[in-house]
Image (tube, rainbow, N blue to C red; front, side, top):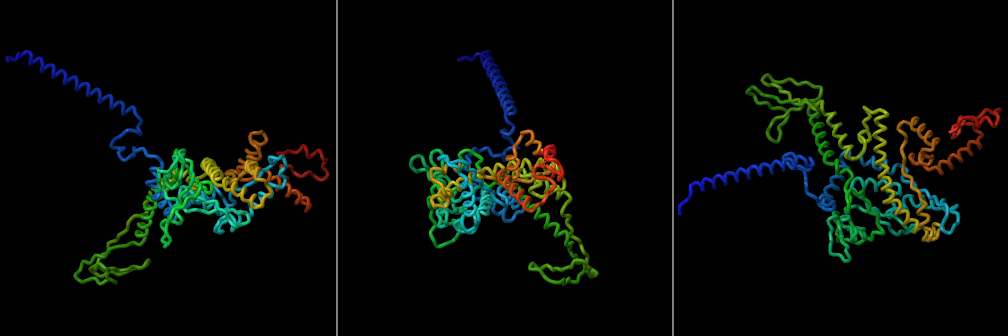
Length: 513
């Protein structure tokens, strides 16, 4: 069959035109894709600068299942050997609990039956203080309640969580607490085949809404060697307190508070150790003896590898043989950038820990009232958040269980039906902080109270005090002053003592607060 040359040329031209059109469409598509990438979030772009940036989406429990053991062990190691971590843990204990602990104060006014609770508040407060003493509040009798509070906060910061079991006890109140090592709650224990939608996640038995039902605990620490068999026991959730600060939805276990800063702490520790070692080497002024002659140098000893060594004492001189030359080895450490570099690293660590650089390092070299006030006020808000978490997670459930056991033991004259009314009228007072600039802060509070912008109760609460306790203490002071016939310059209201011959009405004209 004959082929028309004209038709073949037209076909080739059509194919070439289609190829050019496809090339234009492909180029346009690539351009649109490039523009789309530029219009997307910078943090979501994938390229050579972001290849080491993780993009996988895992639940918090998945991450903790993989890393919790390493996080906890490394956090504990830093707590044992790294000064910055130790300081952070001390800050947590001191600022959340303090030396006096979290104070409980009953404010019961009326019970459900309408009877005035005149003596009940004192009875509850006295019994609570007696139970808190060492030998009563813990099953082993080793800690007071204040000491237990501090230990639990340290554990929460170091391990990311703490657990306390509420046990019946043979003491007068029939109740005591047992602190549990978090390694006994096995985070690798999972079981999805329980009935009614229940499952065990990381050692915690939960319902379909992730509400804790029980905890599966090892009978002892899993790494301790003993001839006794290791077994798990089921502890109901209503007799245990498992507390942590969650940072994600549906989270079952907590992570160490210092986790965002731990890598930098360890790297900085290694760097500082290397610098200190290099500085020590530099201070020794070491050197090498080069023997240019034919005589063998005997030295003062022979090393294991056959080399000859000589020792030089500080401040001494030695005379070399004629054919010997001394070549000094003197590394320049620490460098002039050592201090500023370490300082900037610790600033970054402090930011990751949520505390001020000044508090973490006690470095006051560049601090004034304005800068330290701004830093401390922000930090103290963070401490108040964690104080409230501690009260809600630990103090309230412990007190509720203690009150019930104390009533059953006959230590408190209260009916079971009135327990809820009492619990609703209990106040908790964590520690407060002194003013950064006392004179200005005090004057600001005085003006705030006078103008109705705040109350005396709020001002005292910020310092960790209670208004009723303060007024009672002032009343007792006034009685003592009158008893001993003393005259002070000013009273608690700022009113100066009137002269003996002054009229009674003259006192009213003096300035009051």
